Length: 222
Figure 1 (spheres, rainbow, N blue to C red):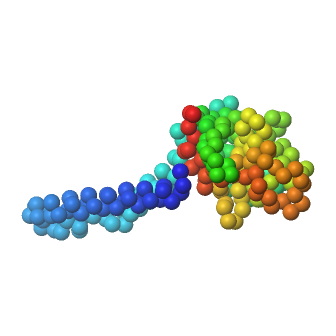
Figure 2: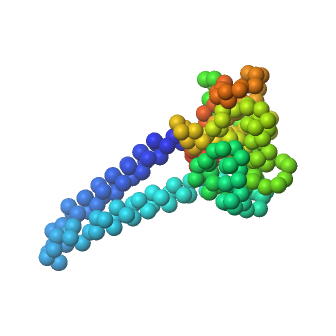
Figure 3: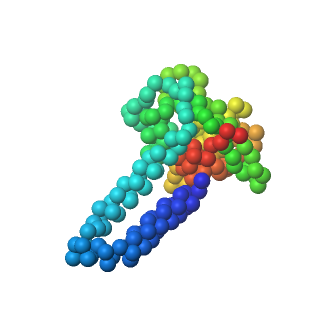
């Protein structure tokens, strides 16, 4: 789900709440004042109301993607271990991804089908495994970074793989300034076949989502 739709929905919800409050005030104003002798709005703490609204906004953002169930995850990682990976690749990971790794270190998920457009055509694929920060050989975040980014520069310098499908393609996360936190599909069959010394080709990258949370929210069963 595009992030602007998410914020638009929040604004509409807030506007609706204000509308209900005003209607309630208009209908109850005379009755309230006849009992208390005070204005209705004297009993409303506007600051507290606004703080409560933004608290709920924050809780909603933190709960994004929670309908997705993860299983067969590795043991919990630490901030120090994640920082070590950042140092190896020379990038600062988005906080959302760091929090995700702390909670779900690799593993599989359900639902796991995602949808995107590749060269103007609608496509769908499945997330087979998320990459983990651990010492194992399979589905290892550092291992895939070494293969795709350090041994050969097969994706842009500020892009990292975070998961893969069953066919050797990667789901990637951007750590770049212009699209920080965006999720992309990396199709190995569309690689140019040339080692990119400038590490800047986008030929085989397709946009999926503008955040990890919205990517997880968009997953379906089919």
